[in-house]
Structures are given as structure tokens and as C-alpha cells.
Length: 430
Image 1 (cartoon, helix red, strand yellow):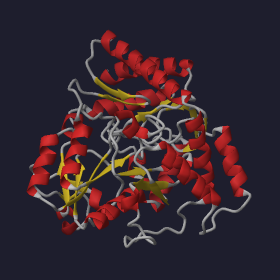
Image 2: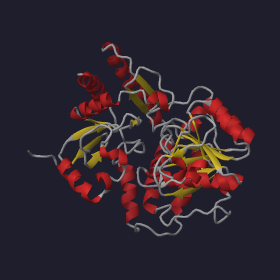
Image 3: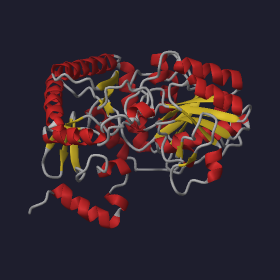
Image 4: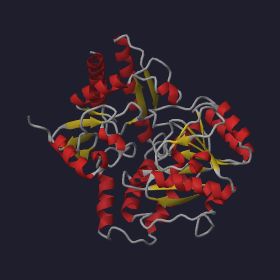
């Protein structure tokens, strides 16, 4: 029996790469089958090694707001490459993009470039600990902040219990310094704070969660966290690796009107290239070496190619506010179409949506936290995923992921996605 090019590549990859992939979700373990190997992308479409074309709703997990291969970003990268690939020394563009980010993001007075979202969150936690002189942090169930040790902690059995390591290689000592609360539960956070008085350095969360599917903060939740952190001297960190510059040009913090002390950003500030950053109050950021005692460094930080791409991307977003109107309209049209289809089919699945982020959960319960997200029918999602793929729609291969829209989507694309969604739900239900 003939196998596809993607299947052949996956067989080869498994001999040399753990699980055949360089990031776990790509392995399709949650949906079954072999992963699709992508060859190229342009606009709203990706093309695989077998020549198949898909409308895609991952957009490199968020940063491709303008679609793939945008001509301005492509030119910026091409121009920058002419001057070499890396210097390990300061460049003009680092200064210019720092100035731009400070002007756009409410919380950021100073910023440090790093190489990934994971590196940004790890660094932000270290700075918060150095600034406060405290060791413990609070994170939320279902929020993902990269693979740093402090974040790979499963919830304890109650609001005031310590978590346990969620991965071999994470020490119990790290787990003891990481407290976990349910998302959207202010009472649980207050219990943790009361039980660990003057010991908590930072509270970190995705202001809109994208890693248990798209989950929105309840009314008053973010404001309540801000109040608790102010009262207790805790550094409030918004992980805006997914939401930064996507939900508005100032991110979720601008959209909800809540200003954290520190903000972490990811590949969106590199136009999709590998990059990250953390920034916030000058008083806190001044603790970072070489100005302060908290050490953090990176040979490739502020890579000139990534800085050129990111500066071009952010400048465009800053100068074209209509981007956000278009994204909002596309999101509303798509979700309205999905809702009509579900109503016609007599189904009551849950759709969480804000701006250009959404998740269709295969559960009839409201999804407000990780336990409610886990009520979803995962085998049904797997069938739905493959039915959508068969119809030329490429989704994130997990129920617990947000989808991301881009300005490259036209009304015709949106109608195609709505039609494919309805057909795929019917196929999945059998």
C-alpha cells in the first residue's frame, strides 16, 4: 500500500527525533493518525509535502496576524539578511523595537529581548523573585507558560496544598515553590495568599487562556487579581505570548483595562520568527543584569533578522488599527456561522470566542476553567479534526488549543470554514 510523503517523513523522523516531532502537540497523539508535514504557506493557506492545500487556523500558534509570507515582513527579512545573520552585539533595530513596544503596551516601561516565550516567562519569574526577595509563585490550572520547571506543576488536592511535579526532571523543591489555583476563582487565590503570607513573589496567568482552549476571564477576575497583588506586594505577570498585539495593539491588558507589573511576549514580536521578550515597570526591570543583580543573558537575544521582522510587523499593526476591526468582524462572522450550524443540528456545544481567538468545545457545559474544559468529548474532537482536514481546513490537533484568525481570511474563506465545520460535525457524530 502506498503511503503519503508526510507518513514517510514521520516514519523517518521517529528514528532520529523523540516521537518524531520537535514539539509534542505536532505528533497528532490527541487526534490519531500521522502529522501533516508542511512545505510552504502563503496568506491564509498552507501546503503540505503531498501537495494538499489547506485553509489554516493555527497561524504558527498566533503570530501570523497578517497571514503567511506577508510581503512587507518578507522584504524586511530579506533586507536584514544582507547584513549577516547574527552579531552577538547591539543593533539599532533592538532600540527601535523596544521603543515601539513600550509605546504600544500599557505595562511596559522597559523590555529585555530573549529567544522564546518560554525563556520570557522563566526570566520574568526570576526577576519577580529577585525584586521581591520571595520564592513562591502562583499559577493557574490549564495555563501554559512554556516548559520551564516552575510551570510544569500539577495542581494539589486543594487550594492551599502544594502541587506535584508534572514531568520527570522537575524537582520536588521547585514544586514546593509553585502554588496552583483554578482559573477564574478569586477565592482560591486568596486562600493561597493567606496560607503563604509574605512568601509569594509573583502570580502569572494568561489573561485570556489559549492552552486549555480559548477561555475568557470572568467579569472582575483580572481586576480582583490586580487588587490582591497590590495588597500583598505580589508581582502580577500577564503571559501575553498568544494575546499580545492580537486582541488589540496593546494586548489583552489594553482590551480589559488591567495593567500588570510584568508582561511576557513571544514570537508575535518577531513576525513569527523565534523570539520573545519580558518587560514591565522600570523599577522591576532595573533589577536585571547588568544594571541589577538578577542575571539573564542570551547570545542570540535581539537577533537582527527577528528584530527586522518584528519591527515591521508591529509598525504595521500600530499604524493600521483597521486590522483589529477586520479580525473582530471575521471572528464574529465565523462564530455566528458555527452557532447557526449547531442550532440547526440541535447541538449545544460550547464556543468560546474573543476577537480573533476561538475554540469549539465538544461539551454542553460552559467552559470557564480546566475541569470544565476536560468535560469535552475528546474522541469526538479527533473525528471532527480529521473530517475538517479532509475538507481542507487545518486546525490545531488538540481540543485544548485556541484557533487563531488572520487578516488573510476573506469572506469566501470564512464561508468555506463554516460549511466544512457543519459537515465535519455531522461526520464526527456518525
